[in-house]
Amino acid sequence: MLFLLCMEMVFVVVFLTIMLARYKCQLFEVREENERNEMRRRELAWTNSEIVETSRTASSKNRQTSGWCLKIVYNSADLTLKMARELCAQDGAVISNFENSYESNQVIKSHPETQKPGQLIRIDGYRKFKCYSDQPTFKDPDCQGYKAFQNFSNHNTDPTFTLNNFNEGYPDYLRKPPDDLADHCLMIISTNQKIYDMSCVSNTHYNRPYRAVLCGKRAEN
Image 1 (cartoon, one colour):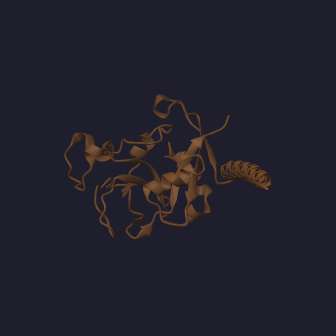
Image 2: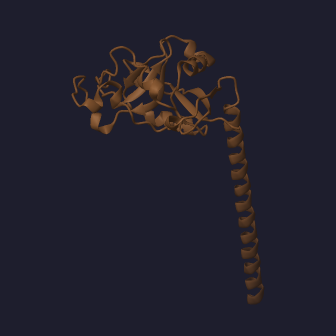
């Protein structure tokens, strides 16, 4: 009797082990399928009419990048810089900049939301740490005007156009309502396609929300 009971327990253990192995295999297959679906989703996200593939002059300033894809990505919630970077990363891209006026014209015209007046679009670029100040009269020569903004996370774009395209009176270094945070990051406004300094951690600018980010990645050969 004891022998039969032991055999029955062994059978149960073996059965459960087999079932657990099958379950793990099924989970692995589901995860693989989800990953494939996510890759397909990203591929589709970068093959629609809102993508602009640009032809750039390869140079040391853009890491010899000749083909670069740009897309304005909108979010339902207001975006901080961290959220904007994560939104680009979901599509296998990085927060980016325009390299010339042709790119900014083509990309901004490609998205229906940017046809609305005064849309705020986050772009790459943030103030050098040594230049952190909310005083427009900050005297360090390396922090005057655009010189304060020479930190870029995307090195596939020559930043010259961005740095020379600030709106008059900007960068202004000033704190802005409603949260009184200093402006250490960059944005472009769709209406005039000019660059402004803005808060990195706030999701509004004079009570207007940031819900768009410029994302970019290398064009496929």
